[in-house]
Image: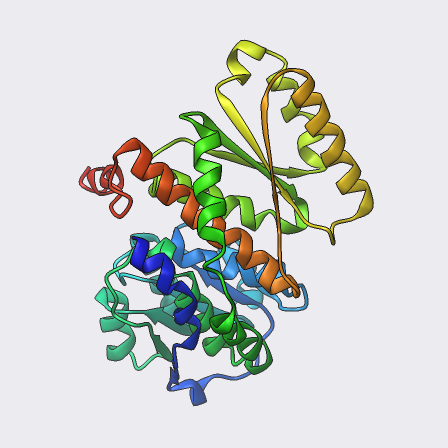
Length: 314
């Protein structure tokens, strides 16, 4: 896992291509169907570039939209393994409804069907890493599928940034967690970042973790932490972004003070970097390290998520 994290920036060097893309015509919505790590890239792109008409679908079949809208959309089905049943369900419905479809995968049934049906296809590198740790490949794959050359150029620049500095930040954070349950907060516009933190804590360090975003969490969730006896089991991690709305920044400061006055554990994790993209990935890399070192501290396997494999057998 440590090697995977250290090598993560190199994922943005991947040279991928869209096979049979000449069969596609420009459409309205882009519906991206993907679960777990495979769906993270669409969450990321939708939040990063609001101009892109991306609709993220994390369920069976396709979204409950009028057939006329679906026919004017492109269905992007993404699965790292190629065997995710929800993604295959989305593929089946896309084919049944004769919707323009792109497959993104490294193999499995999705690859086999895409080749059989001669669908546009982006083949991801066949690497043996968890899907959640392949975010760079997923992003390059999705941007390649959508033909977003300018965004591809932006993301490829991440390969040359120094992300090694965040190893110690993640390690120090783990010392503060000290067996507690992480609760990660950010602004609403950055809410895909604490979601990534959450799933890394869940899958890598095998610990419960929760997330929410400002300002909504101040209108309900915080009341649940009035019980100090229960709340002492949590560590509250604030993802600070200097570019957030000034009122959001004020609310974050106020809530930190409220929690600290109650004797609760509060940590500030500022997003660092020159560009917005660099700041986002400084936080994501920190979450990789924090969850890795937490796994080491707990003496659990950071690579495999056995309970997910057990669940799939039922």
